[in-house]
Structure formats: structure tokens, C-alpha cells
Length: 193
Ligand SMILES: [Zn+2]
Image 1 (cartoon, rainbow, N blue to C red):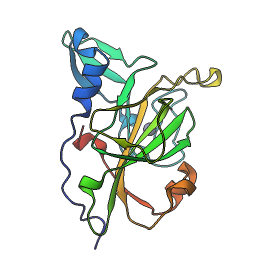
Image 2 (spheres, protein in one colour; image 1 turned 180 degrees about the vertical axis):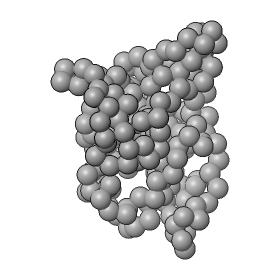
Image 3 (cartoon, protein in one colour; image 1 turned 45 degrees about the vertical axis):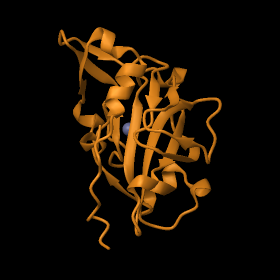
Image 4 (cartoon, rainbow, N blue to C red; image 1 turned 30 degrees about the vertical axis):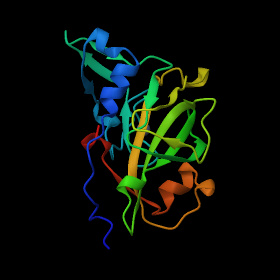
């Protein structure tokens, strides 16, 4: 199978859950705001010196949103992060701000491909364990706080979604190797949130 012929993906209620569980509806959440460097496959950074990224962006960065009075607000530290679909946790690994959590979603699996979502720059819940089953909308983590040397990076969620196209063992996955190999066929998260 040509991995570019990816199966249809159901829209997730991720935004609805995130807004509800963090009380953002009280300030009247209207929509996400994305600057060009935040988008899928962007080559530029949107923070700090705005130089080039090391590699095209494997996902989408969520940080800013608009309220009903068209004010632009930012996700706070400790924003609770819900999971997009039912699934189970397969990996927790370091990233450059916090941890990344990989969740596999059997409902979307087919005989060739396994569907996963990844939640980066987070602090996983203390009880979160590899192998644990999670239900759509369940809170996995909170946003991680950038370190002092990352003062120019606001807390944000890096969301990646994609199909695993090679047989892998999750415990050997790291961001560096994931981006160098063709383990994942990434797709644009904007279409499902
Ligand atoms: Zn990112």
C-alpha cells in the first residue's frame, strides 16, 4: 500500500475538550491562532530569533487563541491536555521542553498502518503509564514550563499525528531518530482538531 493513501480520519473533539476542561469557554474561546512557523511542515521558528528549524515541523504548535471579543490570548502554563481519540499510551520520551507522549489508536488502525498521536512539551500526569488505556478527552498531561534558558519560548503544545509505516519497538523511539527515518508518515493535525 502506498502510505500516502491514508485512510479517512474522524474529526476529534480535542479542542472542545481542551476548552471545557481548562475553563477557556468562560473567556469565550473562539478559535485557534496560528502564526506561519507554527504550522505543519513550517521551516521557520515562530519564537526567539525566528531562525530556521532543524527540520520541517512534524506537527502543529498550539499556543494562541482568540476569544469572542477578538482578543488574542495564550494557553497558560499547566493547561490540561486531552487525548484526541480512544487509545493506549505506548511511549513517554524527552523533548526539548518537557516530555512527549505517544498514544496508539486501534480504532483507526488498519492492516497496514497504525495510527498514533503525539503530545509534546508536556508534563505527563503522575499516574500515566505506558500500556495504559485512555478515553477520548481524558487528560494526559499539562503543558511543560520552558526552562530559564528557553525564556523566549512560550509554553505550547506540539501536536503530531501520523501513521506508523514501519515495524518498530516504541521503547527505542526518540525525536532525533523518528525524524531521520521513515517510521512515521505525518499528517497535518489541523484537519482533525
Ligand atoms: Zn512543534
